[in-house]
Amino acid sequence: MVNFKDIFGMNADQVNQSIDDSEIKLDDTSTLNYSDVLKEINLLDADEVMKQIKDLKSELKDQVTILGHHYQQDDIISFADITGDSLILSQEASKIKKPYTIFCGVHFMAETADLLSQGRTQRVILPDLSAGCSMADMASAEDVEDAIAKINKINQKIIPITYVNSSAAIKALVGRYDGYVCTSSNAEKIIKEAFRVAGNDSKIFFLPDQHLGRNTCYKMGIPLEEMYLYSPDLEVNEIEIKRSRIILWNGYCFVHQGFSVQQIEAIRKTSPETKVIVHPECPFDVVMNSDLVGSTAYIVKVISEAAEGSKFAVGTEINLVNRLAQKFKGKKEIKSLSPYQCICSTMYRIKPKALLLALISIKNNNPINVIRVEEKIREDALKAINKMLSIK
Ligand code: SF4
Image (cartoon, rainbow, N blue to C red):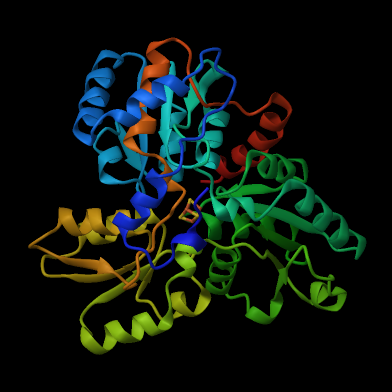
């Protein structure tokens, strides 16, 4: 599997090539073997793949909804019935009545869509099972449970809050400990609510993204000295845990970690009128030096509503930045904050060929890669998700 570390510094075409060369990952739950179909698909040229997707999508229009995350490539987005960030797509997934949802995003998003699907009659399909999220993978349920036990042993009351970019198993664990799920749009609201309910003397255990946790808590007025970075590989520092209000899991997103203060300084020198807008998964110093900070939905909104002639350097995944640049070409100047390609390599796993195979499998009544969260995990994970959704 190609990961972001391997592709840092490559341009988009090189990344594409690198990922094209590796195989689409399929589950083995389908009773049909799709490896021969995949061989045939691999012989098709790109135009033919697009044509077949178009035809099949139209044929299956009463059965299939295609969701496309903002970070997907344009080819995929061109087939999406609904586009958005992970929160919007999960909310939309919960309203879908058609039997199949093809989620063009990453694994935790498909799991969340399955968790929220109505009456469990829909099936959510992830076209390539190797489309994971490196940040979500940085927190395993075992390690987090171990961390909670260690912190509890120091006699500290903690409320876990997990970013939606985490596995269903982590959401379930958080649900069992009376915690919350949050998104990059509502993290501040959720942290405030957790303190309101549990009392200001309690501690928040925020996972898996240290940057979103740190940036949000600092904005709320909590000093850095009251935040402790928990690493499962290191000894727990009891004294520091006791004096902290926030315990951050040592996770991060490779894509957003690729932005730096030096890049902002370069923009300030060459184009002082350009506004720097970044995602809160970026490191603390990048967020501190930016003009605007917010979720992908916020970034899209700000840029869309900005006056003609506005200029933005954007600190988030390159597919979204390029799409915005194209959309507002000639009216607004939009470019990536980074001179390198900040690409989510796992999002890139969802190729048109994988989408075509998913559609063929639905047509055969034998869908591949159905993401189904087991019932016990689902119940607990929904507790944490519903606590988030109940906060207005
Ligand atoms: S951009 Fe980062 S957080 Fe989002 S899916 Fe990719 S690796 Fe995960």
